[in-house]
Image (cartoon, rainbow, N blue to C red):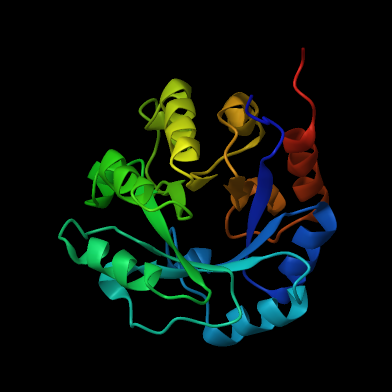
Length: 240
């Protein structure tokens, strides 16, 4: 039987103060990024280093390094994970990049990033990236969205992961990754509603930013109470 309570909360932060709030709220993984620079916007090197020092091993720390097509080859140290998005990157370069990084014997581990809105992102298809990750047990797959500023078809708001893939598709993908020994993080403008219906997928992490920020905005500041609300939801037992 799958332990459906095993998911943790990944919170993306842009400062040491936000890292403090995320930790106080119960985040299981602290991710450093700069939302003003895009879906996986890279923060300044000084910010990444400062957050890693502040967290000081209390939880793992990861960092977004921007899109692979813009990557400068510099990988920060002192992190558990790093990730590059694959927007505008349909060529084989993304496979070579991941293979080269996976040959490394020391952290950080490079995360395979699959955009659910891959058509909008001009990225490799979600299934293609997921299948590639599943060829390497021990790898990590992030399923995210790239086009954060587009609107839902009914123009009612920002699209979430579930505007691009169904709950059933996410459940099946997480299950196949578990069978392959691949850990999964689900992202894509997820909030309380989306996480509640995706809990049955049992990813290793639910990754959030806007849902735990003031005003519900990615550009706002992380609020510890909002982090706690999501962490409690994820940890709550399933109804029998």
